[in-house]
Length: 292
Image 1 (spheres, rainbow, N blue to C red):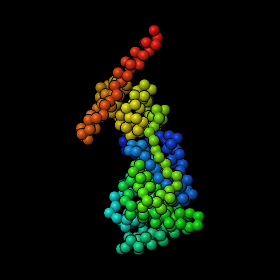
Image 2 (cartoon, rainbow, N blue to C red):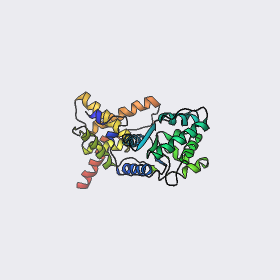
Image 3 (spheres, helix red, strand yellow):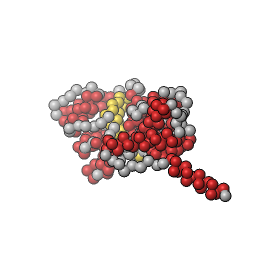
Image 4 (cartoon, rainbow, N blue to C red):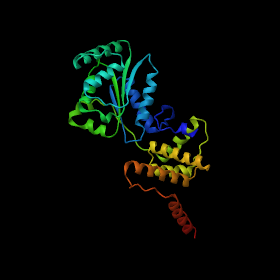
């Protein structure tokens, strides 16, 4: 079923790796495997940061012989001590009464895991929500190292606001430790076509979108993966409800309905749906003039 292929949850199985995403995962793999300490995945809302982070965590989580991992979906901590205690709890490091005692216990545990040839990796999503004191904690943890390697690897994924935080003079020492951050971008039209085909292929279903429909879908969503998935699902819902094929006209209707719902929820009435019929009429007029 198409709704299985285009779920709005971040499912690593349905993530289509564009060249940009492949480059991003390569950087993260290199950072982790070479024990370089810290890297970041940056991008606007809906570009796939969470999906990439979960894919990476999923890949390393299964290799328990060599890696010990945890993922923090949303960092909402009352203090840096609370953050440290949570990370320690995820790794079964006993809780301590003070920040200093907790830090020392974690250092001893990390050193032990390094001796056991275990690579410890922490994935943090929504990292733009990290406060300066929590970013400072990350810097402190990254100071734990041998002559050759970091004892802990930390992968941050966040909106572009995270970059602004890292560029703040207060966090200069942490920013200098970031190994080649990655910045995600919207899909190209060709990538959007391949993503839709890829997701349909995974669940062995026929692709109901022709090139003309995908081109309009791409225009309406500006190549943002999450918005593409939403519009695909709404178009499919209308197609099933009315027992009609998915056409550009149906996609326009679906896009309009999505935006009306969005405007009702946010009170924003400024969005205007691009009219397929008008653009088609203009293109046909141009063609008829050129043929005379």
